[in-house]
Image 1 (tube, rainbow over the protein chains, first blue to last red):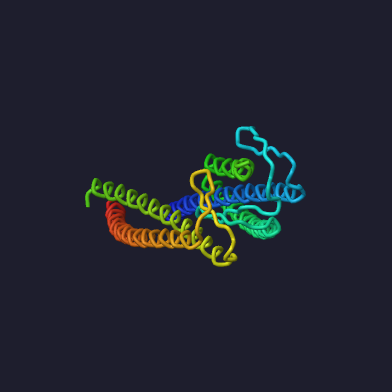
Image 2: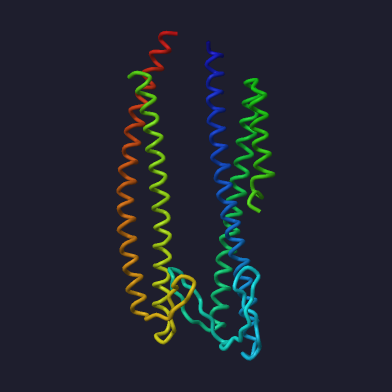
Amino acid sequence: MAEKKGKEKDREKLQRLIAEIQQLQGQAEAINAQLDLIDTSIEELNRVEETLKGVQELKGEEEVLVPVGAQSFVKATITDTDRVIVGIGAGVAVERTIDEALESIDNRRQELEKARSEAQKRLQEISQKLQEKQREAQQLAEKLGLTQQAQQAQQAAQQRQSGGPSGGS
Amino acid sequence: MAQQDVEQQVAQLQQLQQQLSSIVAQKQQLEMQLREIERALEELEEIDEDTKIYKTVGGLLIEADRDEVKEELEDRKETLELRVKTLEKQEKRVQEQIESLQKRLQKVLQQQQQAGGGAA
């Protein structure tokens, strides 16, 4: 009877561990999505920085091709090579000098890079915890003679580690 | 309580939990919009008086009056704050419903377990 009770307890513990593992996996996925978003934003900032620096070097007489989408361009001349209109969110935009805009681009990029390294740190912590829990679950499953479940847990772990984090790329 | 009732209550609990997460998601979305407006308002405060301001109209930007833009943003902010508050109230109410239902279910399940253990 005592042995039976112990086994029952182990089984409950295993179930709890599996739930925890799934929760951690969900968290890791959310952070990965966040990282993708941050990377996209940084890329966009890099692109606009390059464009604005290019515009600054123009005299304002040159013909440039302005993209209007779907790989299509119209010819134009940039009449003001010192200023740019920048959106500040909520459907509002303000005029700025390109120098001012470049400065705020730099600030935003730094903020994003900080956020990225923080997210990466969190992801690492979660991965570590995940590994611990998975090891624990596996041991428990083996003890209970549930080799099938142990294999499942291991498979889920491997899927997550190989496919999960880079899934968004 | 009969097994049927328990099942019904579990279903109700799940429904409430879904409702809660949908409320929370809505609230988060509105809060994001709110933050965006607040940031834009702060930015408008900082810029020079003679800076040109534009409003997006579909895909276009149209020059706009600074005070008008500010007023419009303040209005939108107010509306959003009100909606967030309403959602907060809803969230609290559903949360309370969930908690009381959980408590009731736990009690019933405990009783069942005890009864079952005695019979076995």
